[in-house]
Image (spheres, rainbow, N blue to C red):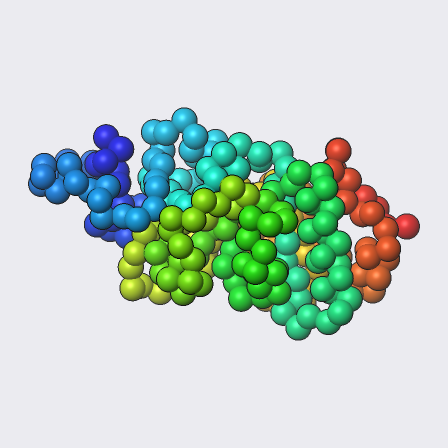
Length: 244
């Protein structure tokens, strides 16, 4: 049955409704093609039927039938210590120092950073230091194949501290931001916004995480300096302490 889900996921580029309809209508499948379906992908995959499939994602509306991945799948088991970070697109030294502070605290307290593939400082820092510092899960917006090609990554690399996830394997269609938000929100327990709740883009993201029941904090610019000098992440109980 897992190969059947993989077959329809590849055929319909991860489109939940089309995959569901194909299963519901018992769409015909070529047996030979089904037998060799795993040869069509260069990464690994898990389906809704796999016990490793994250419960937090399975309990959402229309959870993806298939997740394509490269890296350490066991990172999905650390949900209680997962954190998403968003920062202002126009970064200055203060913002960068704050992000580095958060990454250092996360590393010391065994937290996993959940990321989308937005082109920002956090992505640049993590891509340059894969499997060296923090643990990361990339909720890829678009196909995992294109992401690896675009970032010159190797499917065969043994990523021990990194996991790349996507709903789709390979397609030429435009990405859907809502899908990335949905996947990232499902896998994150805590969310931190640094000086960026001032545009509609981040307001929408903020509201999305709130609606998903996540623990969210927005830190305005005026408080960033104190954030640098104080340990404001409490990894033992809540993710964030009050500022002094």
